[in-house]
Image (cartoon, rainbow, N blue to C red):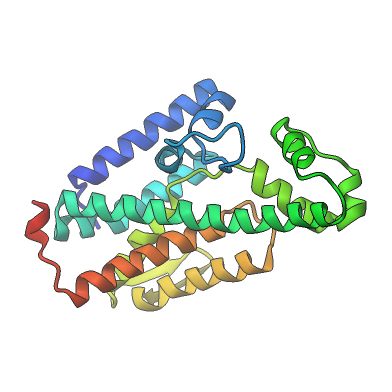
Length: 244
């Protein structure tokens, strides 16, 4: 966890450039490059990738970039640039897919509840696409259901966290006995225990529906794809020379 490898260096630079541009252009950057719900008028196909380079604040990008450097550099050194980039973006795409799938669940739960209560589907969709909602919906299907639908539709996802979670899983596969520490628990924990612990935390908060402002299922999606790829590579004794 010392040398700055080639792919990591370029990923850091691109993330910093996006962050600086976000500070300069603000909301317009979030409209263009965050990952919006596919039914939203703000959605664009490139957001599936571009959201990985967007961050919500200085601490957000700081923690993600530190983790990318600390855990990604040993992987790139072991695998090579191309294999690492394939893995990184695969985990990021997995994060986007699971996050969007969960949003579809909450969105459709609210939409179907309203439709079954006699509200026109087209009316609901048109209202949402205009950036509005009807307070009367709360009385019809309950505030929690409406809040879940609105959050899924209106809240964009940003950050490299999903891809970084995939990197964490790969690190635990490659270096299971490396000792790591949580900020709030300054006791060394082996990677093979540390990584499952933080993923279980995301799973708990994601299922509980806690309003933490964190896309927990994006983290889980990145970790899941990371696990599947590492399991496949290990099972098939993947030849890293293919990526050179």
